[in-house]
Length: 311
View 1: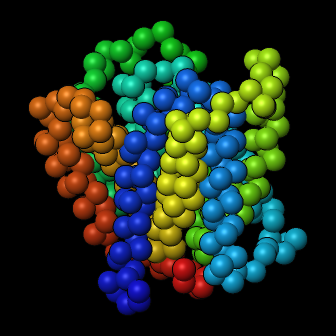
View 2: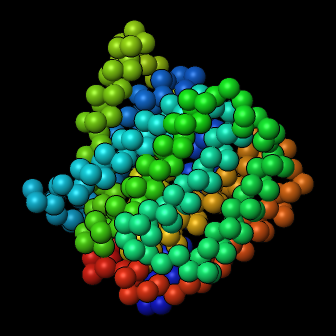
């Protein structure tokens, strides 16, 4: 897909990624009843890295040279911090806390993009972010009792805040790597770099819990959980997230993250029979308007795609 239409479609790829992450909170909470959180995160990334590696190999992509690896290792560190804090924080929090705190990720991404990359926070971008943020909160307020945000889960809340900062870091520091090597390479080798880091953490978790790796259940439910998290929420979503960075700024990509809680609420209603509050349509409309405002911004030369090989 080439030309202006192709560029626009690829710029919207992070919206699809946010949709894939929409059901991740429910799937993760379900998975934690079967597999400890850090171990589940490790299995997720191992599968995601395997799928991405297979795609890269089939696409004829060359393996990175030794000089290329420092950038991928740095991104692998952001991945490890994200998975660790996100999964442990998710286990310790309730649905309203987990969903509402995801709204912080685009905020941190815009701030880091401005500080690290010198991206301009234009009036349109600030307005769109604000409208989308309000819409997301309206959706969540209709689905959850947001007074539960003050529940005694301070450690979990703090870990989810760190997870939001870590994913913002993965996004912002990934810009240069994505535009130098391409989205597929950046997603593939950053996930590969995180595997040994997460392996050490998962081994430590199992040891602390007194669980042998052989005791981790292999059931239809556990396999389905790992498949969803590894293939959809990792391999596909991370590639699509980085694909957007080939075409627009980190701050513009960030606004699509607001869609994640709304998609999660809709999936909960369709798949789990959960009640959608009266504000869902209003909030969803506000969120869509905010995303539309930001996505219409023309990318500056610094925000445009790299000369990396098109995926």
